[in-house]
Length: 129
Image 1 (cartoon, helix red, strand yellow):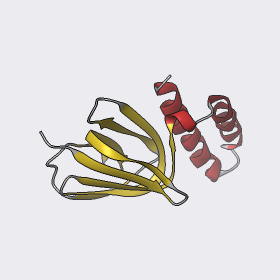
Image 2 (spheres, one colour):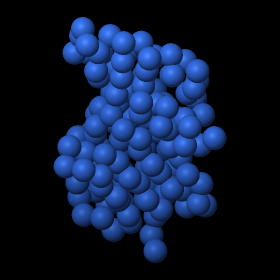
Image 3 (cartoon, rainbow, N blue to C red):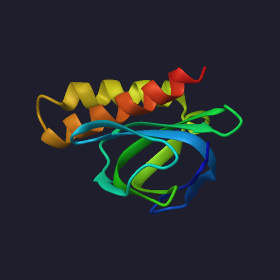
Image 4 (tube, helix red, strand yellow):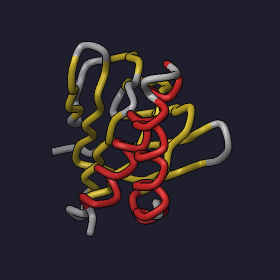
């Protein structure tokens, strides 16, 4: 079985690059799993965890907030608006951000988006600990 070459970047920096067995991302049409040999794809990313399984079996979890990804010839490029590796997320800070966003959600629509981002960050951070 082949392998995927994965490059994950955000506007600020390169997040992760390496070889993988699989990548799972959430799109407006649902979750999509990418394995070696996958047909070409270009899709939008939703605020959700992105999962990468490396060729040595390590699981890489990333909180992705918007962007898109492309797949062609076993090359997966993920371009996220913002993204954080699970180990970079401060759980206490993420919980506080979620509570603030939920409290403000009744008053302001962007607060709903902030709450979704905070939930994604917590799902990724807690999933690795």
